Length: 248
Image (cartoon, rainbow, N blue to C red; front, side, top):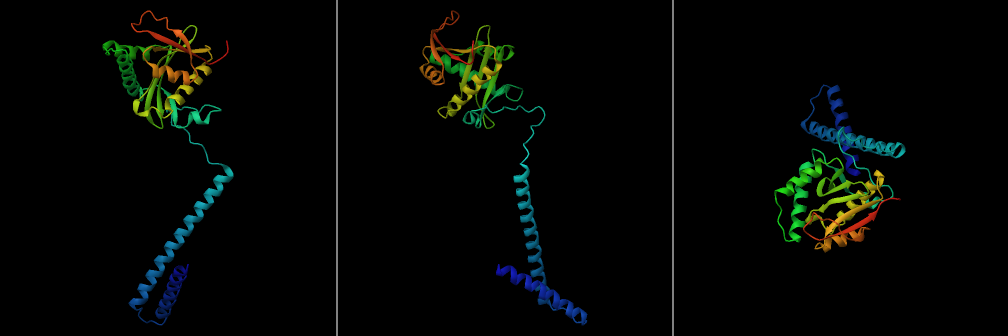
């Protein structure tokens, strides 16, 4: 504080001395000009800094009284609302419908998911796998999602609305993001979405009998083992797990 006082005093005294010399028609010495410049510049910055601090304080008080306005999304931007009553579920993990921006991410992750599932059964993906992904996107009964953490795509999911139930055709989280509860949070949001659609009371998922990790995951998320899957088109034995999402 004493630096401020001395600087202001220098500026005032230098200015007063300059006027005194000018009034007496005497030349102003160089040291007075230097002292006036130093004091004047310091005082100017001090005034600006004080004004900025007061403006910031005024804005903070105004925000506290009126409330800070909520941001409005840009036209066309996808918005995912948090799940009511589950603040931990929303967090920075969300499921977003596949649009033009997220289509490539969905196709890439769905293709990797198919390859991983086939590898568990000792098989390799074929050209039909890519066609299956495109068919999932084109089917009007399918709800295709990308799992996003912050703004980073981390997984993919496909929920199909069939005649008597929903079926989870695909649910995948990239390996680098596993064991961080991203999958659990995303699946809870997806089942909440199914509940809000209010078309069926159950979500069904068919899992390879060889995929014990997936079975454990779905059971931890509230799915119940229903028995062998009646899927005659598949070459691999599967099990069916079901979770209720509404009343009858």
